[in-house]
Length: 154
Image (cartoon, rainbow, N blue to C red; front, side, top):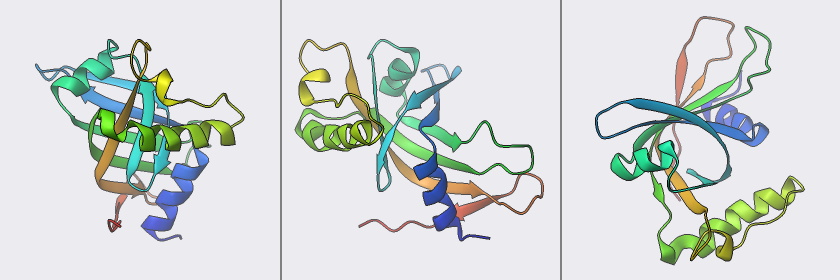
């Protein structure tokens, strides 16, 4: 079995969608899948500020997320779980964040995004979740058991 860190990298590299778990000010939960790009412990996506998950994040930046292959046969699933702090990327960090997102778009054969696509009059904004704690699903054919990922910040 891979180490939790190696398993986390494998899951994150092999899956294109992350499910965000957010809650509004009253604590009402909401989950939504978004296409993502990642650099180290930061997960990036683009969304409209008026969507439920974006409004929830503006009110409560503490979120949870999961990345998994929903097509995996029962008993062979791999998954990455995390707690994170999320928010719209600040204007002075948009250039760096959109570069990460654009690289992943291009790697997938999609149209690249630029700063103009997420600033000014554009309908979309760039969001980031910075992982604060993470786990992977143990791949030992047992019941749901999570192993902590011990990333170090660089």
